[in-house]
Length: 300
Image (cartoon, rainbow, N blue to C red; front, side, top):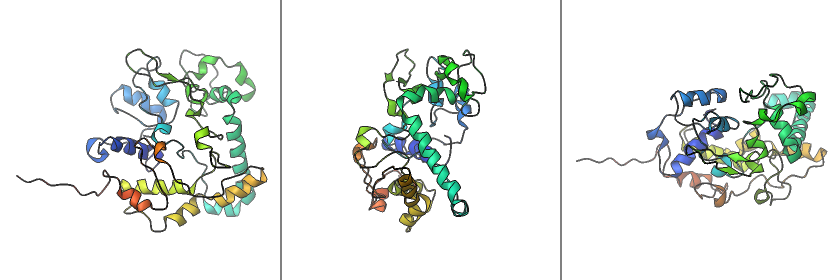
């Protein structure tokens, strides 16, 4: 996986535990940089990986041919948090205007990338070495992509980056069959799918503090912290500054949800287990597979 103590690791552990596999006993999780995952799979150093696109698409048959996609993140937890722009609190206090400008730039960029008519362009831009550098060897195109030249890039450059952004996502397989779905919400930049957009003002760059609580339950579940924090709500508020975000969004004329917490319904999770942030300890203890759980000892 890409990072420890991040959504990638929690998804790996969560999905295998959901089918009764204890990740402490059955396999070892290691950190591998995304561009190196395919080659490590090919030479047998790893048997599976959890990563963002385009590295899954690179692995499937017709590309590198060494793997297939078992599940997208949205199938493990539909509407999960993912990448964030994080700064330290002193930076906010010392550079308030810069911070607000950063947030506004992030929102505007996400709004732009969210539009269907811009996604093919974005897919081309991120093939540049300064982003992913992911493009087929047989597709001849510049290593450095200048924005004014994007429209002239050949369509073949998006063989890896396109499916996760534009749609036509192929899960792959080893039987020669295509498993393609039309899913523009494989990557969510700003606008949410209809089933997630029911709360007024909700959009993907708004961070729910209740989802920070969920992350803390998983950190405790897998033994990365000794127990669920007694001051979890305070930690969530300090790290996910929805108060500042609402102020900045209001300056841009963008409405936001009025609350910081929401229940995650069971149908959003692969194991159909709802998350109620009002009782995170009960939720944590409801998992049979977790660090420090009682283990039976048999004697004969």
